[in-house]
Image 1 (cartoon, rainbow, N blue to C red):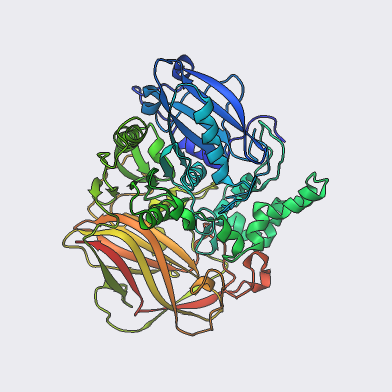
Image 2: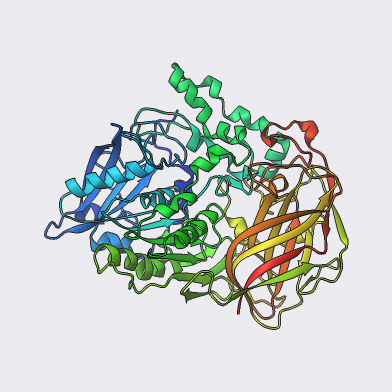
Length: 637
């Protein structure tokens, strides 16, 4: 094992993406924190006796009291020992204003005691000494407000991605001192976030498995996990050559781990790869780990601001469903949402230029969010009046077509209507159902449709969310339907439901639907960072996309095969968008059955568990899409 600190994949990618800083912001090697804060490391005992490593940064100016801003993380609260962070808190403004900032390694991670459980299940009505992440958060806050000097008794939590999940957790059965929480890109349910999308496995994330699934039971300041090496720069060919998913078992060699007692051996079955492969359906294991269903337990005393990116490839389901669940269950809660033109966590960047992949959205978008929204939220609820008159809108959302922020009193906005558009055999997307005809295509198991035309390997793909989709539109196994050139702006605000009517010669299939903004042929270049082979002329911007593993079309818990050649309904809910298809553009729908290796390859023959499928199970099939299929949009009027 390497003896130096290995960053987690997600935190490493996030830090790398946000490394550029402005001159007026804190310099890269700033001594501001060291000059203005003291650092203290403590261990806080939980109700069951497990001790959690906690780092506290307190302002040196002790002439006044400060709120506590806390992040709980599985990604390390480094640096350990005498070293100081160069930046603390959600953003540089809150750091410079003065707040007590706390980081904690969650149970079983890094320097904290205990054994880690991936998205540890919430236990309602806990008995004495029973613990979960909710109680760990409660116990931590209780200790902090009683033992940290110069705190004003108010606590706020925040985090991005997995730390965002722990921010959500903090709101359930919350400690009375918790006044504000901002879950950002927060995981809501691992059957729909990150590693799964509607039952399909995100094969492109497989190298991240060991990050969450390698056993340890003693504190450590060095990485105890390692990442599989692909020895290839072509991930498409790598996974195609590997074949069935079970061939990836070699990268998770549990039999070679140093496990010497019965308790540890039992824990092997909880490792993340085994959890995924042994539980292919939405069973009790996954249901117990979800947090969305428990958000009726968020008290009205906790203000929440949910933050997400419209182009977040990792966690889009989580923040949207978190906002909606709190909104539905907590009628008296202060609950708001902020969604911008960001990929995963980009709103924390100190860079001026805001782009996702090839697509440029404008300058200073993230910086203005940090100053005008995030800082304002925490200051109001931790230092100010803490009433519902925060000066912030209910929904602050960025129109990714018009490149402009809008404020609404509700999400989706009240003046949204549902409109159905129908597929047509001549590649038209029409407001009227013209006929019921068949469109056939061959889904070749040896030549699956790639999710990107880039030749590279990535840990967690992000760029594809705004990729030009011309490469896919020109394949025979991708069906294309589009409107005429729009004569007026057409704004989508809310979810999209694809109501497909399909058939297959096999007994299993995946269905992928993509919503595309086709730019005019005379579109001018406004982006000097485009890949060399691309032009904005006719750019096919992917606005939203989603997959449905066909076996789960009626139930994620109880899968079922297709009956060969039988017309079958497959409905796919695509996550919310806020996008204007501008006058002169076209709205395009793409329908396909493979998306490789973003998701794993469906055998197209029904098996009980795809993770255990054999080579012989994988067969090329002919699929059919019927033209009475429709796409239901949420249209802003």
